Figure 1 (tube, rainbow, N blue to C red):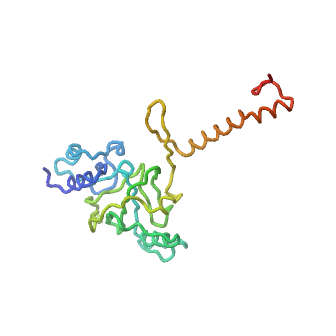
Figure 2 (cartoon, one colour):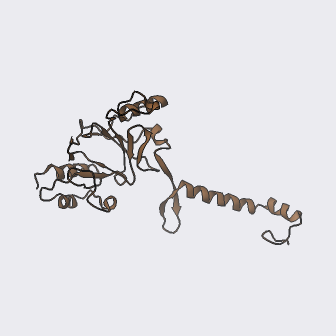
Figure 3 (cartoon, rainbow, N blue to C red):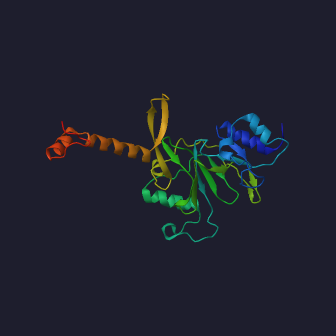
Length: 244
C-alpha cells in the first residue's frame, strides 16, 4: 500500500459513505470532467486513482454523498455589509443571522478547518429538498455546497496549509430547521408520487406538481354539472357541453 497520506484520507471519507474523486495536486480543480457521476466510495477505484504516491487532493461530491456543507470564509480584513457590521468572518456573520432569528448556529457537527482561516460545517442534507450551491446569498462570507457541488476533503493540502478536522465530532443528522426553510438555500422541493407503470416512487418538483394540480382543478370545474347546466340554460348549445 502507498505511504502517501492522500489515499488514506480518501478512504477515510469513503468509509463515512461519502463519494470522493481526485483534485489537482495542491488545488481545488477536479481532475475528472464528469466528476459528480464518477465520484465513488469504492476502495479499488480509490486505490487506482491515488496509486504510485500520487499527491492529488480529495474532493467530496456533496450532493451524491447526501451532504450539505456550509462554507465559512475568513473576512481577510474586508468591510462587511451594514447588516453584518462588526463581523470579521463567515462564522460571525452566520451567528448574527441566527441571533436575528432566535435560532442556533449549526457548529456542533463534523467540521473541517481550511488553510485560509475558514471552515466547512458538514450536515446531512434533508430528505425531500434539493439544496444546491449558494455563494454569499445566505450571509456575508457564507457559502453552501449541495447538489451539483463539492468541497475539498480533510487531508488535502494547498500552498497555505492543510485541511484538517480539530476533533472527532459526530456528523449532525440534519440541518437546523431555520436553515432548511431558508429560501436562499432551497432550490426546489421534491414531492413524491407513485408511478403506475414503474411501480416505484419518482420525484416530481413542486412546480410540476402545482401545474398538474391546476389542470385537475380546471378539469373538475369544467366538468361540474352545475357549470354545464348554467351554460345550457344560458342558450349555449353544442360545443363541449353539448345540448341533449
